[in-house]
Image (cartoon, rainbow, N blue to C red; front, side, top):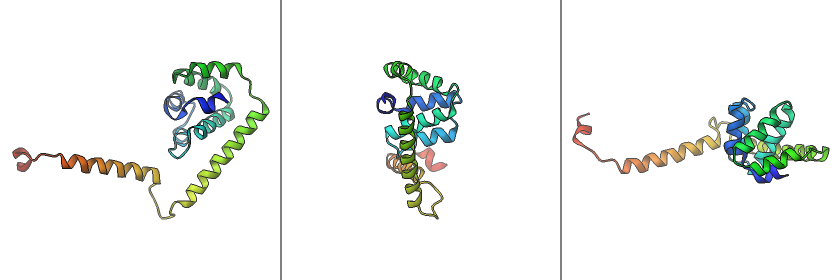
Length: 144
């Protein structure tokens, strides 16, 4: 499937669908979860949109075009979903869910802050430490 392997839904596509009120905040965060591969994120997004029905697929096509993947959008318009493709998508979703459950089990039960958020904090703290090393003390600063 060209969509699964040909686009990166973690960037413009997820943002566009979120701004169009196709995805909720939780769904967008789930799709953009850092430990998912590009293909897993794309399958997850595709599965969510198939379940939503209605205009969700139309919004996906708009988002793919907006994300500068016009060739993929054209191919998607020409292609009809077979039952086998829907089954494969659901199997992929089960694998993603199983992997997520394993990672959740590995988290300490006492851990309040999710691992990916903790990693972001650590990166920010390291940057602050670097910035502090470049700080130059002035007379005004000492008088404060």
